[in-house]
Length: 248
Image 1: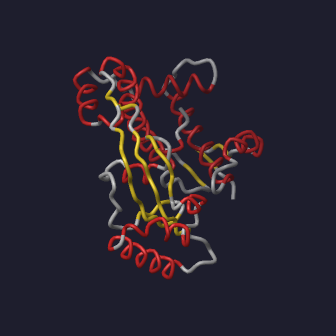
Image 2: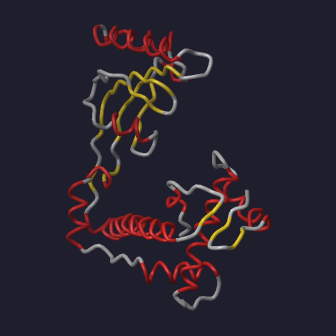
């Protein structure tokens, strides 16, 4: 079924040009088609408003600047963000970490794997000195050969869901619940911790302002795109959640 936007059918040539940029997506063809639809909606609106621009990218930029402007955050907003999120601006913070990974695979029943992980966790909460032994016997991570030792980790060294838990734990603690990540189920233990040093606000003020502006801009652009999609005549494709593909 052809994809038609405001009476204009997307061509095979358009798809061939767009597809390479989406090859890593779960469904490259659908992702490319969605991106083309959203681009067409934006360009049609820019044309309707008579915005002068040299090229498609300039037309979209002019449209967004005119119809979904976002002011820069003021200093008080930036300072409040700095005060509320000191962990984002701390350098040299390190935690000694260890884990036992129960990897989720298609060959292992999840219920049985979880039961083993829960049973092992209960054993280690009662007898924490057995952590290295159980890591060597059970962990599906190469660190298992080292008794589960991951060494010293800083922020950004591991996946976000593991990092959040790790840096919230007390030194020498075993997390009293299983941690689920994209890799599987983890039993997590911490060791010594180096607290690090908070950078002065003046060193990070521009970075904070840029990040807050980008976040506000993304929100404003998604909302505006939702409005345009709602008004457009689109056939041949469903666009639920498609505003996340807005080309910047």
